[in-house]
Image (cartoon, rainbow, N blue to C red; front, side, top):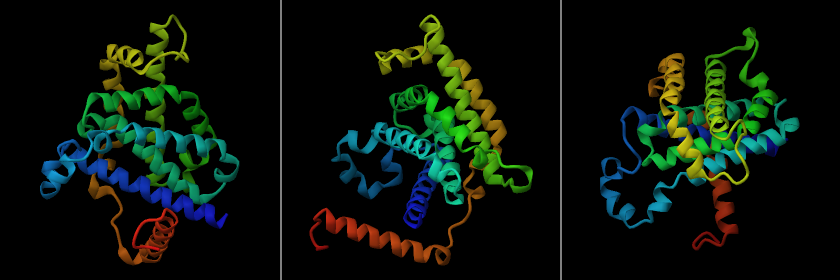
Length: 250
């Protein structure tokens, strides 16, 4: 379980970094495609990079939902451990932020539509995940914290969006859910027809969360508290780089 705990810590940090990045982009109303505003000196380097590599969020959404499936299928191992709490909270926060503010920082409507498609596609997994990790998402009053309360609100919002989009798909398909042959363009066309209602769900969540997504509300970084962990991260990176045959590290 020691290695599992270390892996969960790394996952939690990665999710937290992404949440902070998206929070910054949301507050500054900067789309990640507008990299000249953020990295003026690296503009030429980024401009020569494939747009699919720089701006394609499909891989990010797939990775997040694969993590969701992994945690759900291995809940017997992780759900009872305290080390998984931060992973659950940060995953819920990242998905919630992407759904509620994605149009602010995502480079295109297609990237947001792809996220909605994943939400509908993974509806059963989301429900199961919420049930299996309920102790992390809905703790009793004696152990409730601002983080757990925010995680509960985030997960409630994610399920609300999933339910709303599922209902739109069912109405369009005569009461049937997302079929195996349903394409992303077809589903997105249905979702766009009920976009106004979706925005109402988003606005309700923003009111509930309030300022929890402000950078000032996030816990500050203190190097001393993380120095030993960052050394472990560096060692793992070097070992992985050597194993992959990167020049200069053998």
